[in-house]
Length: 255
Image (cartoon, rainbow, N blue to C red):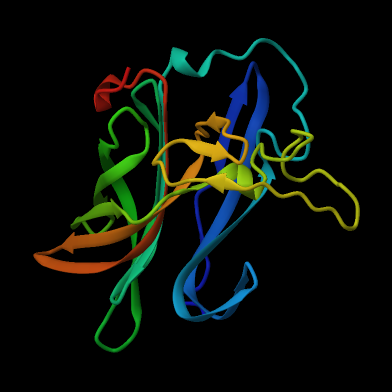
């Protein structure tokens, strides 16, 4: 059950050693899901749980098989990188904010926030500027609390405070580097193909496999409690937050 129509974000575009490595776009949508969840032989009734979905298309690294080699890429730690992606909804607002930084410079910003009016219509406000503040679990790059201070195209300010709720889930479980063949998403593996793994994700950063091996996937998605402050008002809701913070990031106190 959709809360809003799908929202298209701005296109992503980048090159590596002269070759296009990213030229893609996605839509984002929030809503509610209902039905039945079958888990470990038991049935769980699902009644209007908060939900979100996104769909991307275009050229992306690691999608559809390995990239052609055209030189040695710079190590990620040479210039710190940040990617922050929130989509959320409250009783009176919904939308997405997404930003990226490299070497301390902003390289990407997109965002659309929709506010409900008294007549049940929605007003759209695009994000013109955003600043990020991080409170991470000690010794990790995983967020405990994140704040995004935005300026909208109406000139007003909207501040998002995002608090982690429960464990985050690791994106290798959705195919981002998690396949046994390590070829990633978008590779044809036949009409019917299954793999599975069992993980312990109770730690905020580490993923522990059944045999006891531990790894720390960079790409995680964290369910969050959202507090939105705007124009003296305060609204609460739920969101999905991706935060990737790699390399040397003195702006955020990370080395």
